Image 1 (cartoon, rainbow, N blue to C red):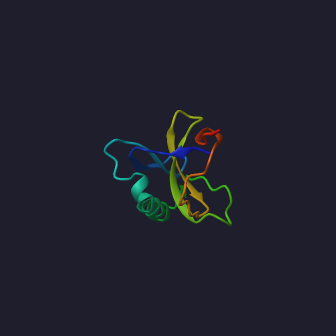
Image 2: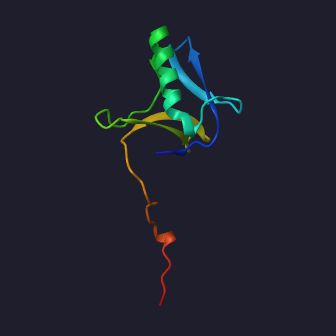
Image 3: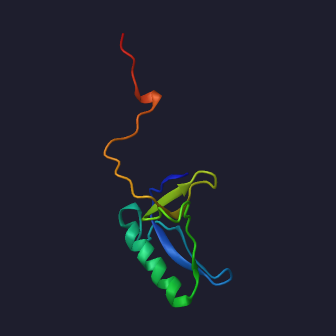
Length: 102
């Protein structure tokens, strides 16, 4: 799984593959704060053009929340994922976050 993408993106249609996708753009209107709007715009264009949306859905039964992620495998390229809704009020603890006091 990637980490949250920190930049702006834009929506584009690839007429060769018939897919609606996103790409990095510093002047793009969408980022991690308005990812719901990004999903709505992608869906609107996909329905209008009758194209497929290019997004990652690991479990279709739990896909509730759109999230903008960066692929660590492909140099930080952004992608849209539909993930399970989770309430993370505190960060998960890791061994590196724990200090042993004696």
